[in-house]
Length: 422
Image (cartoon, rainbow, N blue to C red; front, side, top):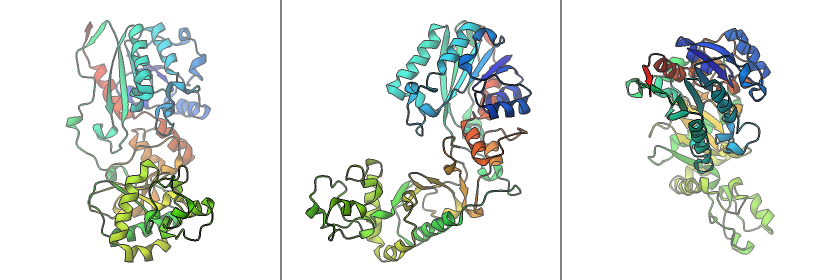
């Protein structure tokens, strides 16, 4: 069967479908550099902006593949959804082309938030639009770990099937048959890797000293908020007077007694209290926990605090998402995130992020970042001859890419499926 590849990017759909015996007859990608790479990798030169391409100029095909841009629906994109003027409604062009060509299937991929954005009205719009042009919709939320690739990356895959077709087979991956694969099998120590900056390694070591020395909660996930060590101020102090606030201690136990203005007070308070004169809701529980940790480990923490780098707000927070009660950062993965330094279980990589290069996973035991070639493996695109040379651009492209292995499984199931009139 023949397919077209819209919003093609690095070609995750192309790799998955061509590996399953399909023929690509058309591709579209708005980014000039990615079009160039796509041509070199697949021998097809993609067209540009899909909004400017008439449906009649697209060759006949059996399947439309479209991983329409996900940033408007992601957490990083602040869930702008269909209100985003640049790309939120690019799904309309997929519908426009499907209406003209009437292919057997349309395969979409996006972040799961498209199901719930705007109280579900955008998802209803997608379903109703395809129903109107003669398609029935089904979907699954699938992660690469479900098909044997160690990356946590949940995405919703949507198959729109023409109403006159009945598919008499399961088109979705049978995730119960897949054995877990460790990230270590995807790493290549022989490649050249970017080393982690000494300042970050130093901060990791400081936090490791705390983990090795303190009595900590037995929880699978928790966050330690260092500015709460020694703090006594009320978590919500918006209604307090200046004189009342002077009775308390701010970040790291700084006395507020000598403060003569609210500006003085706030200069000694944590960054996450600055907006509304209260601890932000997203971190309130962690603030309480951190004060409890301080009370149980006060003698050690008073000597530990001066070693912490307090110039970067997020570096003062440790988010433990690692192994239960095995508090060794150097046996885990690490991400320096806006919310804090996150420690992750070592066997599965976090989702590759397109919108920021600062969250590239760190392998602290080797003092290096995950390489772009290892990231390509996690997207099942490691056999591509060309990926962006620049690391930031490579991770952006890979973070935007659809996972080719998930696509390959779905494409293979569609290829061997038995079709009959509905």
